[in-house]
Image (cartoon, rainbow, N blue to C red; front, side, top):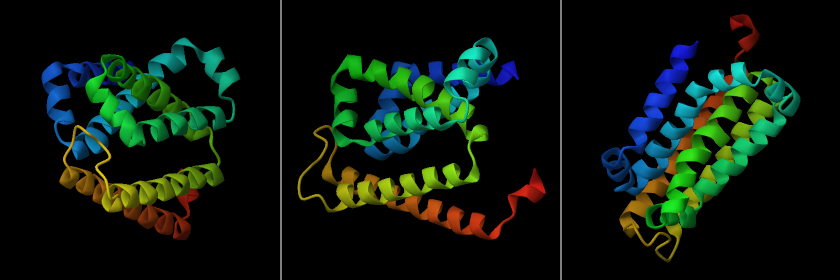
Length: 186
């Protein structure tokens, strides 16, 4: 149980190494679709530590899982904006905020909230992110201007197709979950 927290911390520290951060941030799609999800995953791994340490806080603050998912969604939408990606590369304070907000304000609340949510809320969240990723894919692919000053237009288009592909995968999952009875596996 606590092993996963150590792995999460090690993953976070590894992602914070300047060489790893520079490498993952050098290409737009690895910045958005690799570094940022890995930061969230590090928070998911570390969440058990915080859940055990602050049991009362999570029970009171995130009783039904909705506040945690709302915080997760706000943080993820914020980091999906082109300007925030640019600022993370040019402003140290925004870069530090990325390494704090994604693990601790997105990953930890996601781990705490997901089991508490009803299937309606889980599907609503996936539908929300599917629509968001389709919109962002459209924005990054068909924008007539360069959205991020630190990346080339071709990288912007590649990121857009990454968003479209992820949205397609979410649609496949939603169709699959419509025909599956998950209660048989609980």
